Length: 259
Image (cartoon, rainbow, N blue to C red; front, side, top):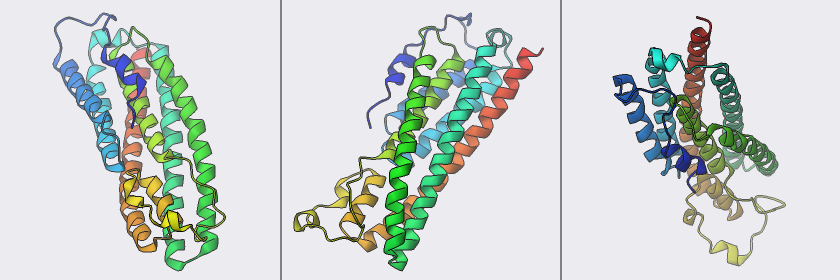
């Protein structure tokens, strides 16, 4: 997966918003979590690696709770910070919904393949096309958010926001896969040349689903869908944890503004 352009901007962040030269332990902890997260972002090439990155993002936001106890951090909290968190919550919620939809589609496909239900399989193909359009639309909104989250004068809160948007982008981009080839039926006749193609050559798990369908590799598809289901379930749980943490942080920001 190509690195997010957001990453290169945020790596050179300048703490020009009245941060002290000597780091508080809470700041050091935040920096360590941010560094770990950025190093893992480069490896977002599978659902398992995305899960690890999501776990790192949750740790990063948990460390913000300690940051918000520091007076000099509280001084930079503004209405804009709260607005940013509202936008981030909306984005996280949208991605959560999309991942849930994708998970249910894959579970439906698994059931259809086991029952050799051609109508159900074709239903998955139709739903997959719709979900791809929804993912692309959500990605466009996230990329617009990336521009506002990557200003030259960024605070630690902006660093965290950029990291969150980057993860959501990476997850959606991976889920999108490549463009599905048009087919009248998942079990339709495939040319002899297609039969020689190996689905395992493609590392993207979503692309493999489409390849197994096109090649009529039922056993491989069933095993693959079972493995994907477990990974997507973890992704969904991680996103829910991040969402709850974002709500908690937003409440802390509102409390700071109201005192």
